[in-house]
Length: 193
Image 1 (cartoon, rainbow, N blue to C red):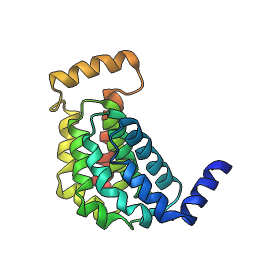
Image 2: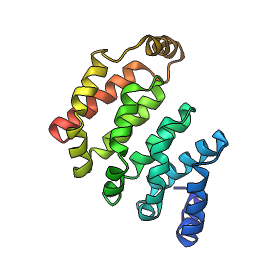
Image 3: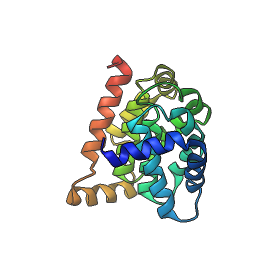
């Protein structure tokens, strides 16, 4: 963690509520770039320390809503931020369950036409699956079956097929990577490791 990021986190801890309130307001901003940047900032803060989880809990409802944002990168950042809120502890598991975050991320993973969004959702779900209550929710939602359908090609619509063709030429996000994440998540849900 670099000096500037450490200073930023210290600033949040010291001036917490006012700054976090402003960040949450930015999640609802009309400007798509503000929403995208804010989801990234919140996800980054959650990734680096669990000390902010209780204060970041107010961001859960707007982050869940942003899983439907028209900008793919905002959807991906929102999923990542929600997953990062489970890396260090289970403190926010009740809030995530209350806001149907697990279900929303699973649905986005299964239905989004952008592989990058799917990858972020699946990574978030893998983080969440390490928390007992969230793992139980994934099992209750038949996540293994839904993920198996992705692997079997059951969700490859013509629109997704076009995205697949594009991603093969651009490289970074691909159906292969999505399948790999599905396999890892299925294994985690069935074995717990």
